[in-house]
Length: 205
Image (cartoon, rainbow, N blue to C red; front, side, top):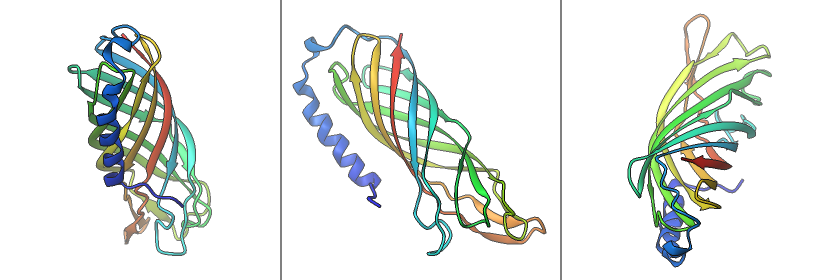
């Protein structure tokens, strides 16, 4: 599987930011100066290929996401993105799927905010709800009900009108919920650490 790392993501976004001024401000379709933007995304979660040792695997999957963005100035904003609870198949828990609900909160810097093409970089934190769904779960295996970690983000906002835009986004989540058993013994971390690839639309007012 092709992996994209946060350092490479930052380099690509920075290069796009340096190139973006070629789309002149007077070409921007209207002002688009609202302070709030609401959007929906289709997200593909791409997890690590071996979350618990070399023999384990977890599948990627598409899920919907709702996001709200508050603009603090021409170049700065903060975004809250809430993913729908989704089951991800794995062979690590005797047929039980891992159910995840990622919620991320990031601060974003937009390059060339007056252009049609607006690259950005972001960083923040995530809070992810997790559980095991279906299957025997193997020896009463449990998983942390929630995890907190860091987020690295980069993407492009493509302005179609003063109020509508298309968003292309990649986020990396540091996500490693721990396992255990119903008897209380300690298990090990599930190193999911996913990349979230998404495309969406947003309305700003």
